[in-house]
Length: 214
Ligand code: GLN
Image (cartoon, rainbow, N blue to C red; front, side, top):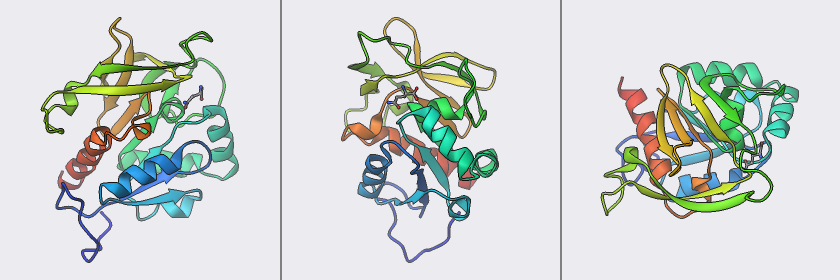
């Protein structure tokens, strides 16, 4: 845990935390914005050294092949794996692909989370869509006490299967998996950072708190 008690606490937590957002490519600024609006210290990460005093990391959406290629070039693959073995990581969309063990093709992956993903699973006709998801894990995080979440999908992957130790957090109406968790790791096919609903970010931050208290 980064210890800087003089820093502001988050408005929903008594714990100071510093969360990095991998800023090689993709929509990292939106994650930074939403974290800061929650009172969390948020920083852009491009180099291995910048992981050192972070409590958690978010890998944004974008293009997973580009993120993987740049991460290799910047010498980030092993440092990110080491970080993930100890601290929470959340991947959104391309970030979820990068976090996974298997994306059915050869591209650099962190291979941390025991999920298999199918890239661009929604085909050309439905590259992007929005829908309401039922996410029981979010219940109680909002004023209305329900777990319904407006999800934005952009050339999104599906989480084809989750391995032992991982659990499903959300499915589409037809049963296909779009959010999963394995201990401190979170993967969402969609982009909570593109809405002004911060409950998924708050859920992630609650994993960071749990981690600190364990
Ligand atoms: N289609 C992209 C990929 O396969 C992911 C899209 C996104 O992150 N919005 O990497």
